[in-house]
Length: 100
Length: 262
Image 1 (cartoon, rainbow over the protein chains, first blue to last red):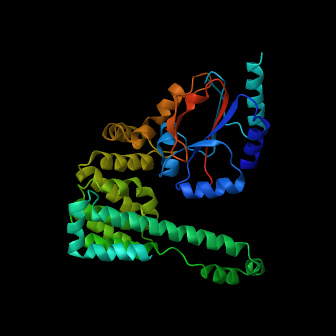
Image 2: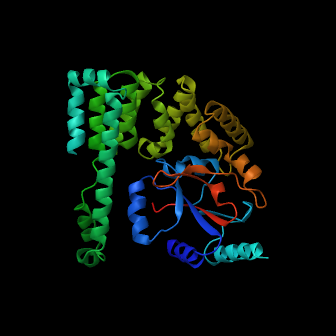
Image 3: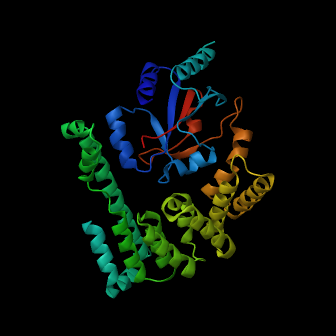
């Protein structure tokens, strides 16, 4: 999971693209150690000390992890729950739309 | 360990609580709680690290095929002493009163790993503190607590809270869990209707809290999170406490990823 996202972020680093996490670990310390270990380069909102019960995931009704939304450059939700290759395809499609 | 012993010990001295009242708005009980929580977290982190280290060791590889050897080996890792810390919370609770006491007792009930101790503490909470706002935490964790406390006992506790508690969010959590247990896959129509009623009531009682958001979420998803809809903004902080918004990234393709290392 994380290796895939890391390579997606690296591949698109000069493109109008951002991966935004909603990190739902209980402890920031866990995040910091692991993020360093696994080379997490992207930015995350912190979902607070309640972890998966935090305010952002509660509001968005997230019950499965990970949950993915892909937005186009206008902020419109275009794809949900795309993982692995499907995530790349979705992002590439939206980037291609932008350059039309 | 040292810190929480120290704080728990200081709390027992009357001079400490007077000094606290004079200089701090934080109650001694909340300080003890924070210390106990930090200590438990520290022990849990140490336990996880030690287990991981053991699993990567040669001794573990060798013991792998032999169940007893493996169990014996895993026993050498010191587990967090959650029940010991819960006992400290109870000792500290005995030295204070009212919501402070209730809050420490709830901490003990949530974190203890000893069934008898949990039962005793919950009985005390039911008897003396049913109206305390401190119960909200115990109610929030009610399903986790029920694993050791038992399903029937938990159901009875929820019932008592709904009937007798006065703190709105506390009652809302109890109703939320009641609705959850009613609303199973093969629930009768009557049970489903009852669950819906409980959720509606809980939503009102918990207005403005994360619980209300959770209850509203199915509707929120239908109304705001479908393909083709503009995603609602997220305003929050990153891991370093820097404020930012999802809408800062307008003009870019964005993948939103709810994730964690756990």
